[in-house]
Image 1 (cartoon, rainbow, N blue to C red):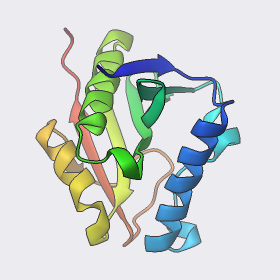
Image 2 (tube, one colour):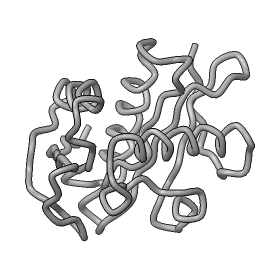
Image 3 (cartoon, rainbow, N blue to C red):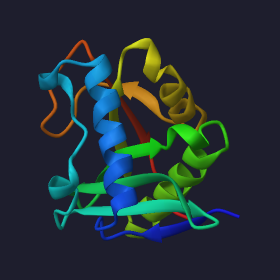
Length: 155
């Protein structure tokens, strides 16, 4: 059973997972094209951050950044290397979609990488109804970025 917790970003496990995330982004994208947030930037009031746990072990994380009262952005979706292909990202993504609907968002958008290493992420988002779009918020066109969005249906 997976447990999702709202997280305060203070544990060493979370710091290590986010560092893993930043390190992998740096492997595939130049610094100016990395949009992953560090611990300090994830602690901003417009961001809500969750972690996924099982039997006391951290499996993954994800966040919503409120762009405006009707539009949210997915940030920091990450599954630990040790727990990939176990459905962790799908559980987190569904949690984020449910939260977006509860908040009354009309749209949820995201930025992910364009290199082949990000194909599994793009496929996951597409399975959940996200479609390709142009840059949103403060983003600009970037050959290392792909932008996706989805209309949120109120439950």
